[in-house]
Amino acid sequence: MWSESELTEQLLGLGVEPGGVMLAHIRTEAIGPIDGGPEALIRALRCALGPKGTLLLPAPPSPAMAELASRLCAQGVTVLPGPEAGELAAILRTEPDSACSGHPLLPFVAAGPEAGAVTAHAPLHYPLGEASPVAHLYRLNGSILLVGETHAASSSLHLAEVYADVPYIHRSLALPHGDGTETAMLGSPDCSGGFPRIEPLLRQGRILRRGPVGDAQAQWMRQRFVVSMAVAMLQGEPASLLCDRPDCRPCQRARKYVEQQSAPDDSW
Image 1: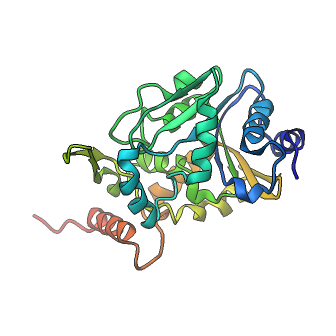
Image 2 (image 1 turned 90 degrees about the horizontal axis):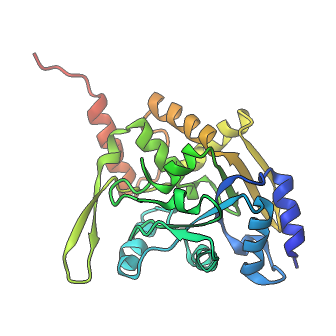
């Protein structure tokens, strides 16, 4: 069983910086049993960041979005948090210095001195693009922590898609309301199954650090470097972070957008 102090020590050894702003994507079951449960894990994360540090977590969608979120997860949108991540977000939300971005489908919760700044004015459209919490994290030169997760969970790579202006980012998604009406959200983040393709490049560039957190394999990295690497990949090949599954309709549609944009113009 892992103690809070042991987890804190591992996080600091991995590279977590006291005083920093950090977005964490965590699969708690990969860590193993924790003395004190998920509350102790939150305390360990906050202890590693210190009193001047800010912790940012993805939060579950609003109840009205539950069915839509389930359908998106089935399509490979792994940036939507599962029940375990939702439990961590619920605990963090009870902290006296916490704030929530409040997006109906892709909200974030933060705690620490920069919690208000990193969650402020989250836009409905392009929820993982400019003016989103992941963009605020970029401006604050924050970091990303993956614990028991691959880069498929990293919402910052959707920010890279927006910064690179890939052809498929302007898709819309219908968000349901309780009265049977819908609102079209621009910039729908679709399948993230191809995102792990960036990891070998991050390793080669010595952008990420790897180590254990409990029983889990973890990665820590500076978000700006990750986004810059992803933007370079996407500018070179706009389909480079799409998955290869033949049954993935979102990625197949995205490839068509890319092909249409790159097709030669034979008009006179």
